[in-house]
Image (cartoon, rainbow over all chains, first blue to last red; front, side, top):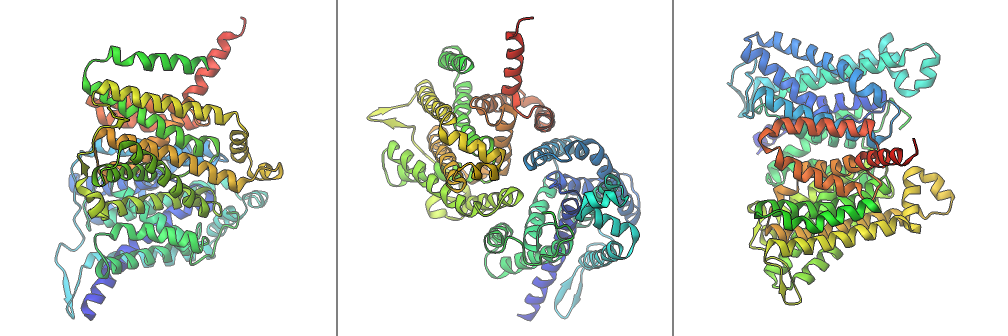
Amino acid sequence: MLQTLLQVALTGATMGCIYALVALGFTLTIAAAGVVNFAYSEWVTYGAYIGVTLVAVLGLPLWLGLLLTVGLCAVMGYAFQVVVFAPLEGKHFLTTVSATIGVALAMQAAATLIWGPYALTLPTFFGTGSLTIGGVALFPHSLLIVGITAVLIAGMQRALTRTDIGLRLQAAAQDPVAARLMGIPIRRMRTLAYCLSAALAGLAGFMVAPLFVVTTTMGFGLMLKGFAATIVGGWGSLKGAVLGGLAVGLIEAFGAAYLSSEYKDSIAFAMIVVVLLLRPSGLFPERIAEKF
Amino acid sequence: MRMGAGLLLVALALPLVIGNNYQLGIAHQALILILLASGYNLLLGFTGLVSFGHIALFAIGAYTSAILVVTFGLPFLVGLVAAAVLTGVVGVLIAVPALRIKGHYLTLLTLALGEVIRLAIRGMESLTHGSAGFSGIPRPSLLGFAFRTGTELYYLLLACVVLGVLFIARLERSRFGRAFKAIRDGETAAEVCGVDTAAMKVLAFGLSAVFAGVAGGLYAHTMRFISPEFFSLSLTITLLAMVLIGGRGTVLGPVVGAVLLTVLPEWLRFVKDYYLIVFGLAIWACTMFLPQGLIGLATRVFARKGRPA
C-alpha cells in the first residue's frame, strides 16, 4: 500500500517537475512581455529533436548534447524575438494568439519534414536500469529531473532577486514605462526573457525525451499541461508556475492511479475549469507583474 | 451584396459541373463548415470573444442528432432541432462563467471545457459508442422525402447555408449586430453607451452555439459516421484559420475561408507537409498583414478599381 503510494508520488513529482519547467518558460514571456506564446509547444518539441540529432545522429556525449540543445534553443528564442514577437508588440491578444498558432503549425509540419514521421528515442545518462529501495523502483533519470529542476528554480529565484540584471528584468515586467524612464532597456530585457524561456523549453524537451518518445506532437501535449500549471498556480507568477506544475503532476498521477487511468488526460483540463471558475487568480497568486 | 449573389450562383451551378461523388462529398463538407465558421465568426469576429471550445459544441450537435435518430428512432428534423436547442443551451451555460473572465482566461477556459466535453463523449460508451465511433447514421429525410443522392443532399445543405448566412447578414445590420461590434471595439465604451454587454455576450454565445449544433447535426447525417477523434483541437485551429484567413467580422469571410481551407488540402494532398507549412505561415501572415482577411483585401482592391483614375 505504502509502496504504491510512494511510487505514485515519485512518478507524479517527476512529471510535476517537467510541467514546472514547461510552465516556467511559458510564464516568463507572459510576465516579462505580456505575450501568450502558443508556439511554445514547438520550442519544447524542437528541444527534444535537437537533442536527439546531436546525441543519436552526430554521436556527441549526452552532457554536451544537453548544453548545446539549451544554447541552440536560446538562439531560437532570440530569432523568435526578432522575427515574430517584435512586430507583435502592443497588438491585441487575438493577434498574438493566432500569429503564434500559425508559426507553431508551420514549425510542426517542418519537424515532420526534417525528422520524419516516426518516433525517435533519446538515451538517459544512466542506462535503463532502475534502483529498488524498499520496494519502490527509482529511475535515476527521474531523480536527475527532480534535482535539475530544484537547482534551476533556486538559481533563478536567486538571480531574479539578488542580481542586477534580475532586478532589471523584474522592473521591466512590472512597469515597462517606469523601467524605461529609469534607463532600463526594455527591448533587451524582453529579448533576454524570450531566450531564457526558449532555453527552459529546450531543457524540458531534452529531459522528458528519455521518459517517452520524441514525436512532433509531444510539445503540444506538454504545453497543455503547462497551461494547466499556469492557471492553477496563478497567471504570470513564476512561483505559481512551479507550484502549479508540481500540483498538476501529482494530482494527475494520483488520479490516474486511484480514480481512473482512462480519464488521466482530462484531469489537467478539469483542473483548469475548476480553478478558473472558483478562483481565477490561481492557488498561489504572487505576481512579479502587476499589470495583468 | 454583389459578391454574395455571385457566390450563390456559383454554388447553385456547382453540382452540374462536378460529376463524381468524391468531389461532391468535399462540397458537402465545405457547406457544413461554412455554417460552423459563420457561427464561430459571430463570437470571434463580431463580438471579439476568443473561444477555443467551439468544436465541442459541433460535436454535441452531431452526437445529439445521431443518438436521437439512430438509437431512439426519431425523425431527422426532430434530431436536428434537438441538436440546435441542446447546443444553444450548452452555449449559454458556457457564457455564464465567461462573463466574469476575459482574454486569455476565456480562451484557456473554453479550450479546457471543449476537451473535457470531447473526452466525456468518448467516455459515455453506452450512448456514443466511445472511441470506436458512431456509425450507421441515415441520410436526412424531410416530410417523407429522403435526400439519398449526393446532389439532393448538396441542395439541402446549400439551403441551410443560405438561410444561415442571410440571417447573419441581417443580424449584422440590426441593433444586436451593432452591439456585438461595440463590445469587440471597446467593452467599457459599449457599456457606457447603454449596451447590456452581459446579455449581448450570452446572446452571441448562444447563437453561435446554435449554428454549431445545426452544423453538427447536418455533419452527422452527411458523413454517416462520427468519432470523438474528429472533433479535436486541430479542427479548432482549422476553424480559427477559416475565419481569420477569410476575414473576421465580415459576413462572407467565413464562407470564403471555409471553402478555401476545405478544398485546398484536397487539391494539395500530395504535398501534405508542405501544405501545412504554408497553411501555418498563411495564418501568421493574415493576422499580421491582412487583419480583415481575404474579403477585406478583395473589398480594398475593388474599391480602388471603382475609383476614377
